[in-house]
Length: 255
Image (cartoon, rainbow, N blue to C red; front, side, top):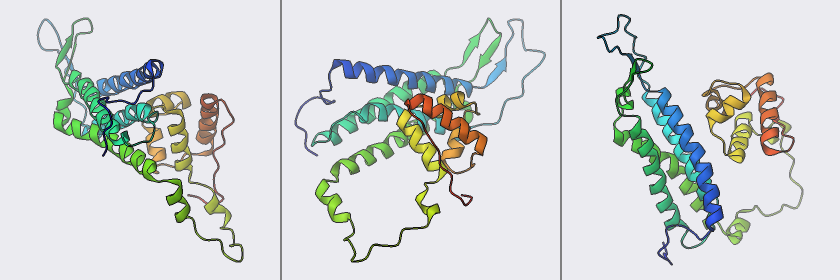
């Protein structure tokens, strides 16, 4: 890795960094909202124990991890996608990774405090109730940025010459085209590409499409295949977000 300057960021300009900060702030608010929903509510009374104790919900450590990974990756991509390729890119991305992880941990730590809301007579347990340590949460945040950082570096190191070598040599006779179903990307991959293009979180997309906030993740992971009505809602939502008609193609055979 070559380091040519003392700056932790490329010189994109003040306006560009203000735009990046604004977009990141939306993700920070989204993470705060997502984690706050995972805090455990307990009854509280200034007169003593509540006569109607609440049953605690099941522990959800994987929900906490998923939210942290998802938002950390989104926050990282907002800025990293603007960085130019060059000898300092790895250094810049490493520094950005550290900043994003610290932002995420600051938000997570704020939700680990026990608090009491006197107005609503409620008290809340911190996220540690789910069985994760702060180090577990930090690891989840690092996982969220590491995958994107590696992908960006790999793409930047692939030169046009290298790409040309990877192309197969033309054959004397044209190859037989593949069957139609293989030409159509999986629905989950098409949805994932649209999510990446809009840079919205699963929660924002779920709200716009009218789904449970974890349903988009289940769609892009392949756990659940969306039906025709849901696909139509996705098309309408992404068309509005991207300012152009969007069509999600489905292959003739069931995926």
